[in-house]
Image 1: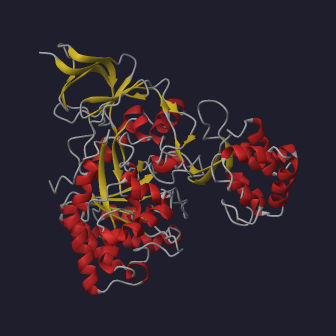
Image 2 (image 1 turned 180 degrees about the horizontal axis):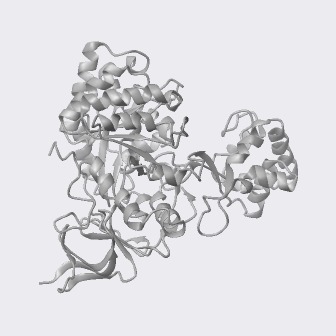
Image 3 (image 1 turned 90 degrees about the vertical axis):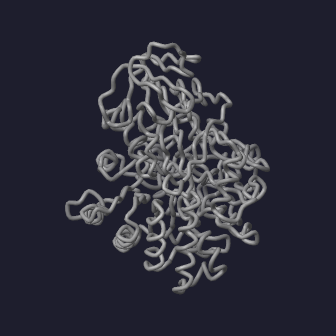
Length: 566
């Protein structure tokens, strides 16, 4: 009998970390039916000779909560081999939600994650109140890849406490209510709970989002309920108080006795330790706490160019004050911006303002031109920073930035490194047994950041070009190791009986392409996208959703609910 799909003669990297081997993979329905030598033909066949055949990748940090409503293809990650994406990170979600609170949650998502409020309110059906109803609603949208969601601290706290959730400590009774609500959300299918303790994540009025300063007893009570129902715990920390934050994570781990995940940008250690996390992680693991940290496998940061709003902003960080020449520039559309910088007087005013702010020269040390080739250059050394280029040319960094915009007719992009800036330290950090690759933030910071191609970067840079990882270890971390954190036992490896989420990858070619700005959000709002090269096929639940780097139009994804709840 023929199989539905046979992938022939590939280099099978099965996701377990085992040595690759040459063989075939047969698929029937949504399930892998055979791995090894497949004699029967397939109704559809993919020639994988000379290509790696891997499980589909698992992206543990996205914000597709809103984008799933109008982009069922869930780009950019579906261009980069991802077949399962976790959204609802960082404490910000759209459920549970009373009808009167929709604008509040949409406004919060806009300021924290740079997702346009109007797109959120008009692009989603908003036909839910509970978290389970939200998942039901998203499921009707037929996503191209699998998605699974966390219930957020902000929405849960606001649901119980209203406006007091922003500024006040919860009472004992409110803590019980919040914990019960989160527990119910996990019972209804949330894969777990997320919280966010970064004071810089604020509401439209500048106040920190609900839960930022929640007392440990509140997080402990919530963790107990999440663990009781088999959910995971995801956290973003206040990294300026790392020791205190790791202590709170430890309390949550003791209470929940479940899998924990936190965003872990590289943080250099002291007294012989590799990182500032080491002591706490070792202590937690000694107690049997299941803790994983997530970090980007390259430097993460903003994209600065004439097409984005990330410019040089004298006296105000990355964004300009309205009263400055830079503030006037940012109000214009792209064509008008390009015309403006072509005017010598305007250019002189921009340079004059920049020279009056001494901090700009220091900030320019983190600006790196991505180059003019199809592949962006993310790993340039310090001597190729904008600051260094300006010094060598005897110019101010802003003059070099403007020159590059003129030379490329406004197409140039500079990567503004924000975290994981020590590229030499990254390989050792990435190899820690508690660290997993991720934090692409797909679906968020849509006009500011484009880090969603991290899977392709890991394979092209650290595996193919630098040899820091074997392909089997890199794939293991992106597949079975990440699926384990979520509690999915039926995905992440190429074995008979597993769900057929599969990639066929040309390892000689795989890479990211240059990021681009498009206007395809509801209302024509802008966002950055990034395509990939080298993906001969991506299969989700047995269906080919990507062929030769392009979508087939098939949408075979599922909303994956908490297995314990199911």
